[in-house]
Length: 109
Image (cartoon, rainbow, N blue to C red; front, side, top):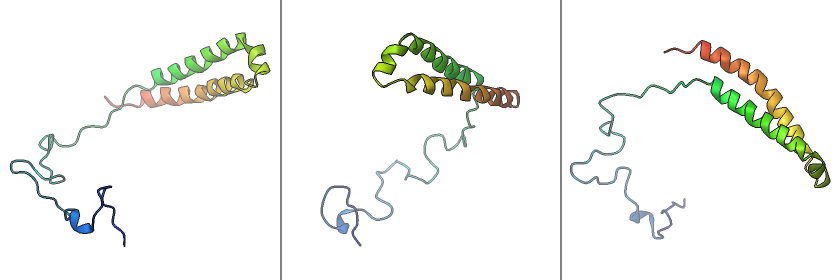
């Protein structure tokens, strides 16, 4: 079996064992004594999601309306599908917005 030596070359004797020596005064990784260990786990973030969905709708809608001004140029240069992509993003964002409104109503906190 070939063992990865981290690009240093050499043999597997060059790599430390399962637990490398830790300098005095510093806790070993994974022993639960690191920063924040006394506080426990941090709660999961649950930000409001409606603004994210609205931002996506505005981005796709605004970009689509802007690209409508350049429709002839886009078609001439083979980029006519960009308008369809904006339309799809906007239309798929509508059920996403409804889902995020429902999610935000059920949020705790």
